[in-house]
Amino acid sequence: MNIGFPLLAVILLALLALAGVGGAGLYCLFGIIVPYAAIATFLAGVVYRVVKWAKSPVPFRIPTTCGQQKSLPWIKANNLESPYNMAGVIGRMALEVLLFRSLFRNTKVELKGEKPVYGSAKWLWLAGLAFHWSFLFILLRHLRFFTEPVLSFVNLFAGIDGLFEVAVPTLYLTDAAILLAVIYLLLRRVLLPQMRYISLPSDYFPLFLILGVALSGVLMRHVYKVDLLGVKELAMGWVSFHPVVPVGIGLSFYVHLFLVSVLLAYFPMSKLMHMGGVFLSPTRNLANNSRRLRHCNPWNYPVKVHTYEEYEDDFRDKMKEAGLPVDRE
Image (tube, rainbow, N blue to C red; front, side):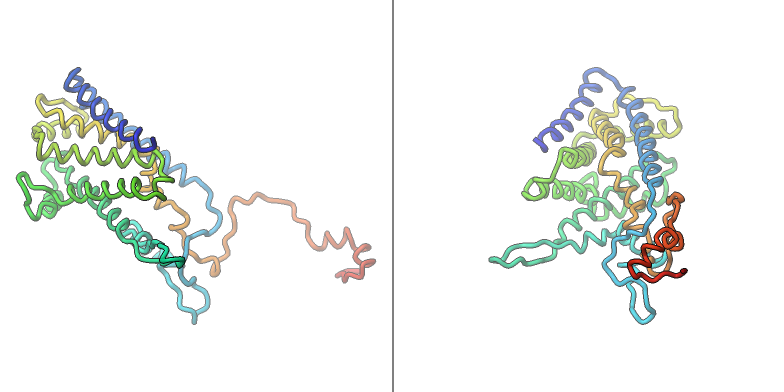
């Protein structure tokens, strides 16, 4: 059931767009109102979540470390595994965000007889890397619909993406990569008993939704052709806040657009917000310098302290009777 409801929900969303545009002719609703509402929800939700996280108190240094901390001069420290300055923090964050460094070192355990054996597990790292970088390239490619003239780096990325010129029109490498990566991540949750046991509908829904977005985009490019000039006109209308829905763009475009809009609106309330959360995680963005600097909790409220002198004044007679030394007679 955890996988059935999300799959059914994505299918119903696609059918809703088909029925709304193809049956009821609600071009303005699905072409203007829904995209604007999705973008507004995305921006407001992301800002709210980021501000809420940023306001959370982090009074102590709690970075995740797996290397030697900076201490005595003759002990070699590891500034990437246990960063002690801002340069080390930036280096570790860059490797984590751009290359998924911690996921690259993922391991798996298998039983060989009665003995556990640990081995490398790189497929998850490779699929995650392919998925995220492909998603980024696809977003940058789509900028050609929102700018006039088209930015030079957008054409450069599109040329690199379609380097091998497979099929007509060209099959972009990132289109194939993102489909394969999402399918792998989905099958991993379905086929591995450990992953299936801990997976919830909230884990499956974004995977099916992203798969629907990618699949509808590929079908729209290679099977169910759309009017690209009309798409460009509509996109430029969004940017200028004077949108007009051109006639005859194609039903497949509205299915793709509606799934993208749902993904944008769902993004801030889902686990996909790790995109922003990774930069605000105190286990990653703090330097591990507690041995070099004293960190005091700035949220500590003033409390009345019972000093030793006061303690001795209160219990001096009893301390003398017990034979305990006192500072003052």
